[in-house]
Amino acid sequence: MFTGVKVFSATKAKEREELGENVTRWLKSNSDLEIVDRVVCQSSDNEFHCYTLVLFYKHGRSEQAAPQP
Image (cartoon, rainbow, N blue to C red):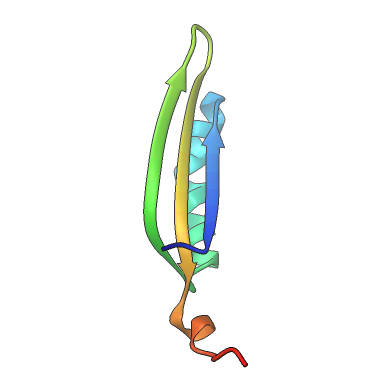
């Protein structure tokens, strides 16, 4: 089960080169999240190549631990 989704997508060559760094930066700044699944897609036509990474996550236990009234 997941509570959120983060999508990373890049079409231009420079964006594709930086995609891994962007994902790593996001993961570090959201270290309270637990990644529970991921989907990687690549698509292209005659001119463009698109790379997409979808991360499914849930919030860490510290945020889930508080009981709801």
